[in-house]
Length: 132
Image (cartoon, rainbow, N blue to C red; front, top):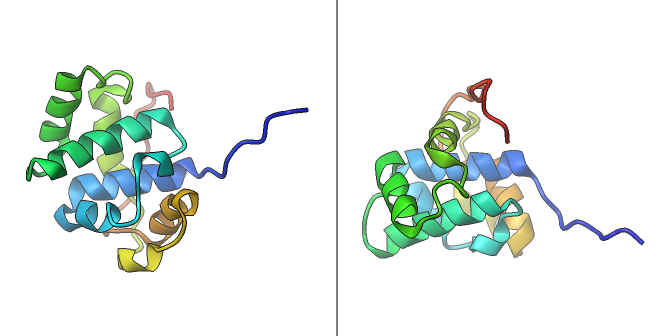
């Protein structure tokens, strides 16, 4: 018998994380419904945990502060590295709907927030050398 995979949507995870990096209010909205376990990809869990650490320290979660906290914790490379963090900020789709529509249970939350979006940015393609 094969092991059943939990529900996952990596594009939604990228969109949610990117939104939280570029919109100050997005992180505060997302932590109301998300936990690190809401993310399927381990690197995304580490990124979200870094964002939570910054939020709990009352610091902005941006590329510089997130890179610093992940470096301090020794998890930057496991989170995809600085290039991947930069990619997240450019990978946010354009639809904007309040995150309040994303209430639900944990694994569906990332999909819901990803579909609803937390910001308005145009998506960009990841660098060609980046492997996700």
